[in-house]
Image (cartoon, rainbow, N blue to C red; front, side, top):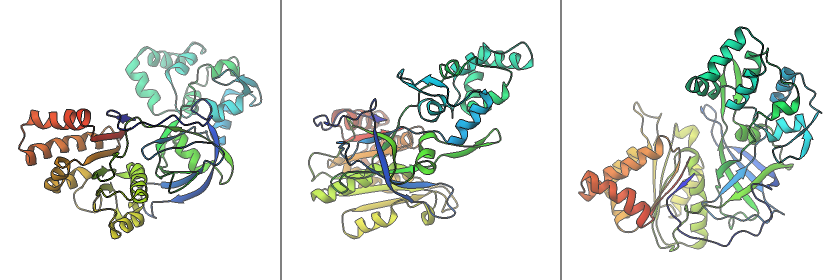
Amino acid sequence: MEESNAVTERPPATSLYSRKNPFLAELTRHDRLTGPGSSKDTRHFVVNLVGSGLVYRPGDSLGALGRHSPELVEEVLGLLGFNGGTAVSDPRGQPTTLRQALLRDYTINRANRKIMVGLSERIAQGEQRNRLMELVANSDALSEYIDSRDCVDILKEFSEARFESPAAFVAHLSPVVPRLYSIASSLQAHPNEAHLCITVVRYESHGRAKKGLASGFFADHSDLFVRNVPVYVQESRTFRLPKDGATDIIMCGPGVGIAPFRAFLEQRTLEGATGRNWLFFGEQHQATDFLYGDELLEYQRQGKLHRLDLAFSRDNSYKIYVQHRMLEQAKALWSWLRNGAYFYVCGDARHMAKDVHQTLIEIAKKEGGLSAEAAAEYVSVTLMKTERRYLRDVY
């Protein structure tokens, strides 16, 4: 999730809870951040850490293990024809029931190569077998096929395949892996709590409504004040505030990438940091998608957020993103960087972070008078690796 080198270190936490032994936490708050009419469903969750011994600093992430919807589990059981109470083993070899294993231990909301091979070994000659064997024999076609399908999809399409036992079926599944969420709070500001900013993933494919494992679990299947959310703290090795509170920081966090910067602002305010804070935030519409907008505007009113540049991409006849706002403020941004400011980016690695990176290079060329090669060297080597002032939490 992170890039760059270490900025600060701390002694390891003393909590007994970890990825292998997560703490069962409860949600104590669940608010919708996006307004009516938004195309996104982004929410604010508060996780209660009382009794866990878990501690974190701004920049850390909370690992959470999602659980499937009971409806999906029952649909899979029905297609398999197995009793959900049958004994099987979880990924650690511990005894459990098939229903519990499918609910919390094994991934069934996404198909994988292993289960496709397992189906191909258990299907009689015929049209379904021919289709299945063609897929399994073509790696690219198989990748494309499983990318948009879950276990229900494939069990329906290849209904002639039969697993001989529940144990044989789960042996072809992948264990559920944690989802890491950048923590959106300062522990000092919110003792015994971790705040999360999550966009609920919902989509339709192959005629069925589907949702993300972790985000769907938080939104739809985690009742308030019930200890059923397995979590642990994933410490950041790199994504840290400057040691010197007098240092200026520039934060670029569109969408849910705002999360760690909410924590940064809380922490810097608590500590009385004298360095200036500059935030670039972007989303689709200001009226419905200005995440934590009231808080950010209040920080600005109080003089704690010294610059706030907003990019709402669908509020104009042409799309405006955070990198466009950076270019508009190129002279000031370059001045901050040359005077020692740290630059942070959080969010989408595939598109946004690449665009922001290239924009930094363009600013170095334009405002620093550097050649293309020298500008790339300054951003990718000097800032990122030598001075460690360009830090990324991208995924």
